[in-house]
Length: 227
Image (cartoon, rainbow, N blue to C red; front, side, top):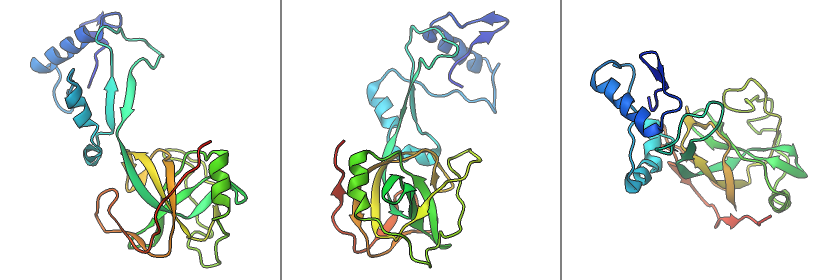
């Protein structure tokens, strides 16, 4: 828990966050609140906050930090706190495109594991310049592509189905992602930062952490055009 809005029948919404935080800490100190409730750590120290943004904390389920003003009241219905997510780089095989092959809107990314080629992420919408740069490098998938006939969710926590076209596995995408991962799949779309020609094996070891890949015969990454 990181905030308290009412206690003992007294509403605390208009009180500044520093007071609400002190009340919350007191509730835990007096064991009014006990497990399964847990007091979320807080700090005013910038160095400590930056340490919490280390992507390594993602393995423990910490996705970033929330910034709240010490004098700020609680504002119902407004996104007054600022959420800052930890970021890490990731590599994935371009397994398909959303939209048209001649003008890809986004890229479903894959990795190999013991089962085969599995979806691990979807990119954010591609800019016009990036679409133009990629279209010359993308080709329709061969008949033996493992994703022919496969169905994927359109997004984490949604029931919609992802509409995509499999492509020949010619490219590796380097992406910037947050650390919210569910069973090896990124919950949120990743941001494409570079792509490389690919002719080897991109494989994740069983039980390995994020980014633990073997990459063979991959050329130097190509930076994306701006715009």
